[in-house]
Image (cartoon, rainbow, N blue to C red):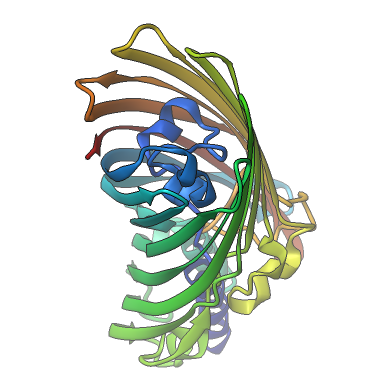
Length: 433
């Protein structure tokens, strides 16, 4: 039982790192992003998030925008693990992530040389992930541990279920000033609130040699963070050049544990960091955004944008960030066309390249929190209902590359293959006073 308790501790330790460090930065807030992708040089209402300094060139007076999105992901894990030196076994775990209601709110006021803006939305987190048959990091080590007692799978059953919820709600405010006819600058801040819950169990039965194994967990995590934001915008005729920088957000999460049970009485869950009141780090990285926009005609506009997320220096639980080669690079491009005064259509694309190297970054990836390089494509349109109201609609799809992680079980080696899919759609209303 001592060897099994040690094994259980190692499983839960990995899970703790996954939960505390499973945050991601979200940029798909306004529906103009969904239908065009690149919006870093915008001077419309979505610039309250993507380009606050550019709002001084936009509508004089008040603007409001409310956007709703539905996003759905799959997170699949195929585990190949050795039953013995000459035989492998494959287990597939299918997880779903549902975010049925993702709201965002924008407010902006532009008066002469000054523009003030507010944004509120989910700036980080991956929604709700649910693995109805558990995950490999729980099930496989338990199975292999039981094999050490000459207990074969036909002698027991494993019932496992894992759920994780992660959100970061951000409230952002900025002030911009038009310095001259071509140049403007902005400064602001964002307050971030982490809301997370992790619930799961592993139950094995019919093990007469050592008895059943029963582990149960229900843990909330809460934390606050604050980060300054600065930006600049240069406009010359039909050309716009813009940049903004978001400083790193330091977030320390505190556990509020409602259920913590381990039938082995080894204290494994507490030692792994799930004890009530325990703390862990889950920073959000700094972001540099640089963009260029150009109006080829009064009806045709295009933007090109670059993002760098400095994930390497955003501290995570168990220092998972140390296994990254670098931060994340993103390239975005989009174009929109006003068919007439009422209808606009647009499309765009995004390439996301994480600083991951198979082998070196294996300790960054785990079953509850894994990243895969991707391509995204978005399209949609807008309807100018009247001179005050615009309705935006858009959707985008993301295609991910698989990631193969080598996993060592004693003297034998297995492989976890991580796969993802993503799609999102939504609608939004912009209103000018």
